[in-house]
Length: 347
Image (cartoon, rainbow, N blue to C red; front, side, top):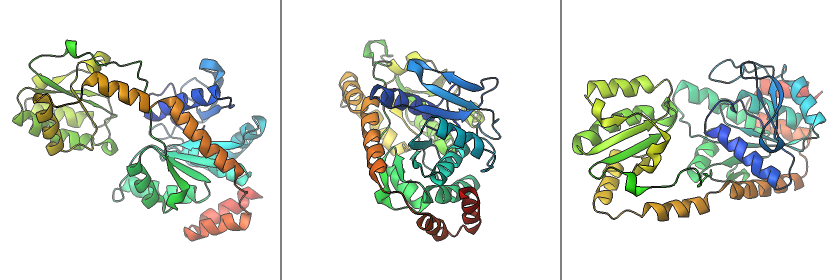
């Protein structure tokens, strides 16, 4: 598993990699994790159940990602892949420079490479344009791609211009033992809407800032609880001040999960949220304990690991792609400089 995003940094990708690795180890696989150093956390460390982590002596350049270099990471990645006798390299996150470079080096060495895309991206802003260009190049040589939803699959196929048959959908999971609904602790006269995300543009923080004033003006008994931090937090704070909503937002605590009646992601619109509030008031919503038991049974890390293992097995049985065919893949993307880099690193 390779990514710029791993513990001690906190986030969805970090949790996904750790939980998936633990479950794959339970199924008898040898799993190691490669990431960059975090402060003085350098070298090899061992986590729960002996999970081995390589914290490479490379410092992050921007937004917890290392500077794209290609060649300087080759000796380190090659040494680890040979030392650990790696048969599959699994990169995570479109933003992760280290993941893309590790998959590139793995394919050069004839090792299978799989990529998991965790987020949705646009097509118009500068960050998305650059990321999509890199993704087209990176996934041109990758054996298979995993997305966490069908919408994510459509997004990745369009952004990377890849064959949809090369993309599998394996949803994320939850730990149903951590949070259990407790309706008895909820406020009897108020509805609380909880939002959990990193407060950045691509997570819809600007959309959230536009939705909250409209909902609060239409429903005086609705409060918003926002869990998360990031550069867009100032946008939320300014919205609260400008609309005088200081008494309509609670500080985030983990216990608020059991107190909330509604949970939304940023893809929700005002109309959809209004409909959900109306259903809640009419007591037509699904019982929270029933919903919790259903979700906890459907979305488990053991199930994610089992489905990921099937992808690994299918890719392991595929014949190796010849160098000529690999170069043709890059040529189809019109990235001639990348072909030059690939040939140089191959020899």
